[in-house]
Length: 275
Image 1: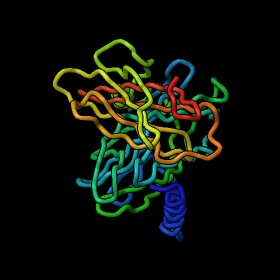
Image 2: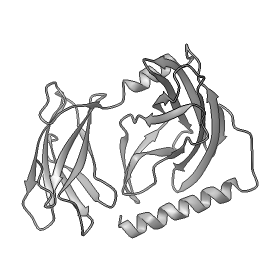
Image 3: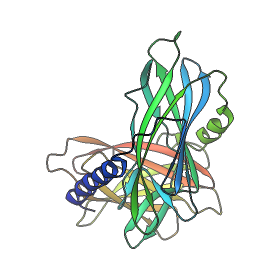
């Protein structure tokens, strides 16, 4: 998908979201029913100096929503926490997605239900924390429809949803260095010969599994990922990049297999060479 098309799609999505919400001003709540979906704000109690929360999106059968990187089609969720009280920083965690391919292209999605764990750092540790969230997200089957929810929730300790959120945290990819130990790892990233800039990525995965690799580059870069026959090697192709690309940019690789996931970050120079 070209950069121009993605920008246009984003603008259309936001316009439709505004139109869908026009004339409707329901009071914020801990949960909201949307188009073939429900969103709920969870409370998990304190975790050290932070609070544990979560965003639960439940989807009707056959519908999907998008990961932080939507792939070739679709748009990721957007979150606005600005109306929250006594909140210094919010860090949304992302469980590994599924790879979905249809006529619109390859998308990285969640189906059924997903919980995005949220780590909340308060401004003042001795004062109450109240989350206020405005979320816009896409609900897709044959076409993608914008959905919107306004939620709020005071965080309590102990949190009633702690076990549920901790279960979702276990699905968040574990950060791991290139060539790290264990049965699941990104082993190497090397330049690949050809007319189009590309990288050859080799991985290690448990016997009998079919690993899936997701690649993410910075804004205004677009990379695609394809599996090489054999299942333990992938090609990451740089489809688009800014003309004034800096000397070094991050490339995040998320490897999923056998119900587990790891996240490995490498640096690329301007010629897409890993280092």
